[in-house]
Amino acid sequence: MLPQPTAVNADSFDILVYDRVALSHQKVTATHTNHRNVLPTWSTDQRWLTFISDRNGLNVWDLHGMPVTGGVINTAQASLVRLSNTGGELASGTLGSGTFSGPLMEWNPVAPTLAVLAKDGVFYLIATTPGGPSNQIDVGTFASGQPVDLAWSPDGSLLALSTGAEVLTLTTGGSPTSRVKRNGDTFNDVAWSPDGAWLVYRVLRGSSTWLEVYDLDGSTIAAPIPITEARPASGPLFSLGSYRDVMSVSPVWGTAGVLYYPAFPLLNPVTVGIFSVDVSGLTP
Image (cartoon, one colour):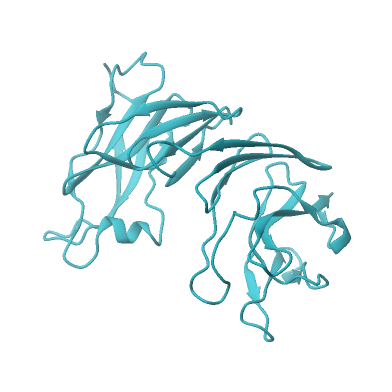
């Protein structure tokens, strides 16, 4: 699904879905009087096709949803439901101008709850039901800064986030717990182990960067430890930071305790590529 500009107005975007069986697409917001709809996602329970919408053309952006029943989308404008109430702060800027900026957001893999960072810095947990909005928790702002990464645990019980200065977890009720925070270090690219017992994240200290693992209950590892060698954080042509702006460099857990991660700095020798590290044998 991609926001699709119309030929009439460069500031006009609609939502399309593609049928992989019929090999055809449908502009599901075509009959709407509003055509400022972007960033489509499916809710976890597949009951909603959601997107960020400015319904009045005044740059007031909130989450809206089209009901989905049996895989069929109700495209009627009258059936559209506003799923968030953030005061229109989920996005900022103007479509088609190069200034538009959408929210950081991630659906819970188990429950239909969306974690979303509004553009005014307020963090929300927005839960839905088949009939519409269920609950919106205003988590507020974090003292260590705005979240830059979001990752739900495999069982959906915790949301991990990094603010750059800190790694935290949130319960589904919005209660935060600080996990890692050290003066002078920056944290990004948070990921969970398949069993939800460990967090892995990237550390930036000075001109070096590495991956580190944190044991949530401390039963195996008493304190965070590095699991990769330190690599230069930047190169003469591209930096790890600039690549991170346009593509994911978050590590991904495979099977049998193997972690895969990309490294992009262009140095001599060239170290660009996908790497792996076996963390199954970690001991205190």
